[in-house]
Image (cartoon, rainbow, N blue to C red):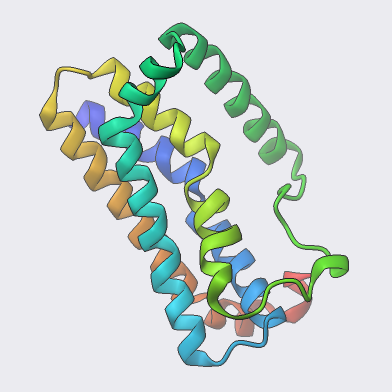
Length: 180
């Protein structure tokens, strides 16, 4: 059981990237000029929405893939390519493709940033969805593993929420230029 937990947890933690998302969160709430209450609403709402989306894929993802006629082997290849690109971005320290630039800094107003870009695609993006589909197809007969996966997703998203709530402290420690 522990042999399954650690690799799945590490995979989901790396793909969801709670610490990286917290810095994007901080940049977004600062540029949207949200008050502290609205910042907390966003920090609670984004992981909640992401949990809902990923839960749908945990329970109904295989049926969706079957209905679309996608074979598991194709999913493995596509997921491997996607994970390769994520790994290359991490290896060479490139900025995330979803980071905001000064050109679109005023587009997000209010707490809708919890839905886009935080919940979708940062917290429940294609990498996390692909990993969930691969894990559920490998353990299709195990209801126990399904609930372990659900718990891991909840734990990683809880970590993301805590990181977002504590991001303000990180800003004070690292200074504002670190976020630009």
